[in-house]
Image 1 (cartoon, rainbow, N blue to C red):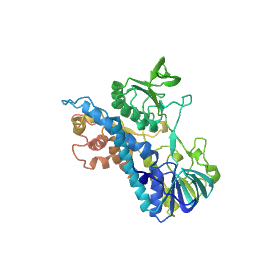
Image 2: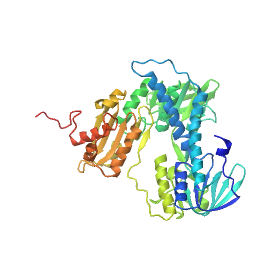
Image 3: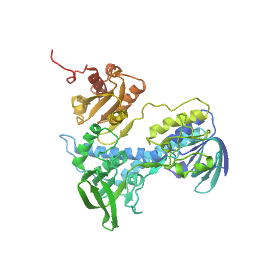
Image 4: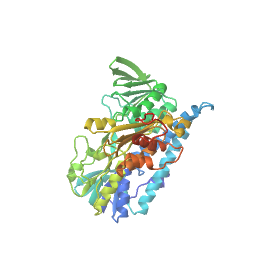
Length: 481
């Protein structure tokens, strides 16, 4: 990206505006754009340039670019009856391709901000009062006085105590910079970020050890969704350690020495790099919110009501800073509510479900109730699971180990939740989200004609399984008449 495209607007040392948005990630820029469309004068503040926040610059987008590269490498090596030579990796070109995608999308956001007449300030913003913010920019400081504000300051990676300040110890941002490919990489954390980073570095040639303190990868997801992924990774990675704690021992010229403790004992290993992916913490404690009277709890979370208002009526908060789930698509929907309310509309954030996706291979996606949650809350459900070996599209694409499942209310037959593991799961789950939001029952989904052969058919077939009308496999109630 050119210097001209990334340079922030240079405003006067003092700015007055109707709405100030603090943070320019998916939540922040969506809120700013929507408020401008509704006629407000808007100032958008972010500590970094270009626009897009962590998601665009250091998270969602660069990771998906690298995951695509990793998938092509894996697919080329596993295509039945076709043999390719070993991939020749040019890290500089891989990084450049990733960076071009980020730059192009960032230029688009900057153009949208200019077209809407939004003033963009680069610098760290801290509240000075309930109507004031000081922005410490790279060259000068700017005071912003606002009528209303939306806090969208995001989150930062959790850093484990006891680890050294050593460049070989990475968070997800450093890992996505792709400085080099270590011979041996230890990834601490078996959640979505850890698993996605593991798949990238594994495909690029690193030997992966994955450590998770819980007894399952993707804690919180149902075990049957995780099992196909766990089986595949178990064949590829050097070691997967569940129910395991990592204790750092020493940083040496030969590598980073650690001790891994599990129920079976202890082992000591040396790794070239360590990636810490144990979660993120909200940035609520870093913005001087107390000067505005906004309450921030000990975890850095700002509590809000259904209109995204904080305890200060004219100040709103959205995205990671208001708590789990820390997902870009949640933030952007909250942003539309906050911007609308700030502009006089009567809106509420009332999503019945927020889908989660792990962009692993195979992908895993779920929405609504999980079996774990339903069981914990004592909610009755019936589970209808369709194995993908009955799907022609899945089998012909090498995805026969996937599955689609629906959780159904035993009385109303309405859809309570859904889970998918397999190719395109992150795209397929959207249909289940829509079905739940529209209060659909299994019959509605089964009667909707899906194209054949497609992965989307598996949702209809799972619904037919629930209805007892499936012909592609024997229904549970089958008895030969």
